[in-house]
Image (cartoon, rainbow, N blue to C red; front, side, top):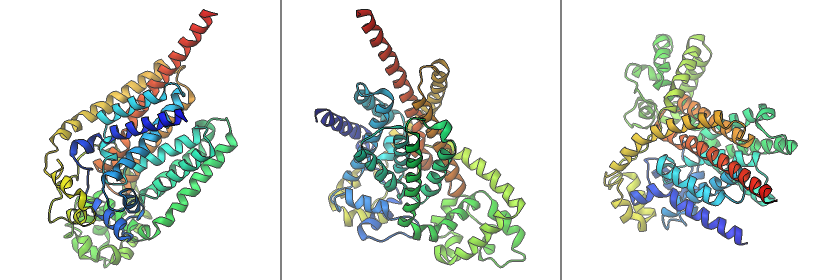
Length: 452
């Protein structure tokens, strides 16, 4: 009981550390999409372009509109718990509390994780789902803990449409490579666990089936426009086919988000989300069945993946949302107790200059983390256990697949890179902790032998 209480205290302290950027801002970080999530949760209406899951999460953990501070506290609490569990996996029981808290402090100061988890968006749940997969497949837990991790994974996957493809691919890769990436201990159980995780991923479609059917073609079209594929296809086919989009083939926006979210975009002029479905599907199928455009898809997908891997700054899209904006109106309506702190936040006062410094720091941290990680794997290859190698492999596979998924089917933007890139310094940190743990264990063994 005493050990559990101490663990909870450290998880609580870790959560507070992860809220660093929210504390500096004076309010949880908001994004334009935050408005949609508030409306979906408080009005209990499923948006046409995303599942209602995060809206319900926001409503439940804001205590039905009491304060949005509670939402990010519970987000950070979940992430803190999982980080401590990951650290315990590689350091053992004796060192994991202090080591876990140290890891969280380092990540909060020198990576974008605090910004992502302090933001009223479902972005952090991509990493949450990944950590759940890693713990389930590598750890040994009680039935209650395992059920909780499965539940957390299911909720996290159900937070965003992109998670279905992303985690479907990750689990397929793990199943295909299980002989190489999973421990042979309790091997039959690992097969079952992958199967359960895969089934939960499929079941999560039930929470977003309507949104997927209404919006998947529009998102992919936006990406294809950003990649220049649609422009080429329309130039070749508008002479023989009467697409509504042909009238705008020479004036299409250069970015996917401009095409989808700018009210003056050609997207809305030809009918928006409902009226464009059949036309977009026909264009998409056309580009995926002709060699010329298939080559373009492959080339642009690789370029977009590399672009997404290099984009992970914070603050993009986090402008000021003051009176007259839909987000301000909804905060005022549903969270009146938060309105004063919302209005006076650094974000809404356009005083986020400190975070510009962090954006110049983060690339240095990522590069140094990669170099240090490579050095540690070369120098301490005999010390680093298989757990660490598997964790590193899973994390890097997910970072790459996330970049491919976002860049290929949506758009390469900093927010989507930031939500995963912090796993690189986290990987380096747990490798260091594992080496320290091994050396301490060796020293203790030598001391005992010496005493004998």
